[in-house]
Image 1 (cartoon, rainbow, N blue to C red):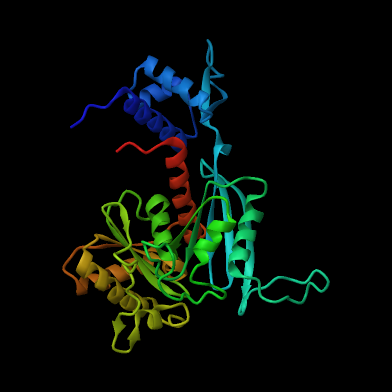
Image 2: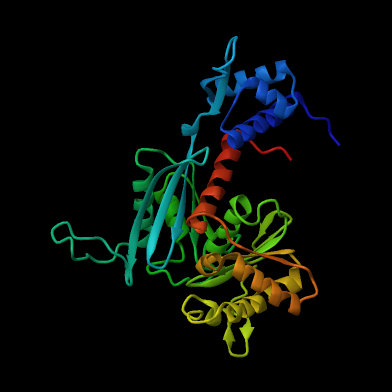
Length: 360
């Protein structure tokens, strides 16, 4: 093992303090000392350094109810960087912009027509002009959400298998107007880091960061919505596979049809809870038998609306199929899990670049 250099030690301490400020919002110097275990001079030095670098600022004072001088409260300079998460569906593009602390500061949405994104005529708003290229619509929606703010990172979530080497879609995803070089086109139009990720993978990121998989190193997310899919997290890391196909279980299924055919939103209409749970359990078994993740999270509208009652029933059916003990939980991410996952991913990129690498 190598001994950390003073420069490396300062970088580790700085990032540790910044992560604590991200978690707690504001802290005093004594609180930073208590939480980090660092000495008074070390904390004083890092506070001065972070202020000089424009990363933190005094946002108030604490202890107004006690005697003596009040301690300064420090917080992260939220506007130091901004990021955007983009959810691309087959009928809409939705964008949320957040500051570097994760606080949303802007949003925008735009519909995509059957023949591609449509733009209303200024003369006859009820009529649509010719389809606008999808890349242009995405870039314009991002710009609307950002307003006058510059963006550090933009993460797009879309259906389909994303090649981890090129970053582009490996197969057609059915989104009107999608082109093979869409990502490269967007990188020329948007002045920021722009990356593309499978939508279900992003939903798994959101469940890991703020939902039912918090604190778990291994889990599988089953996405049960208009479309059906899965995402795999092992060792605390999202697994994409050699070609981006990890979790692509939907072509598998039963003699009577694929998982996608039998578990999408239309196919489950009218099923009672137990029959639905039995179908989901057979889908879950394909992942549990190979990966033994210990946890399966049911996401998408079907998974979330079914709640813990459905999750419990799925777990009971899964127990009859597999000898491996596996918890089943309903997804609990508030709002749009795909959009939240895109924001979390973009924030990780921005915080790494602006704050430095997180300590191991």
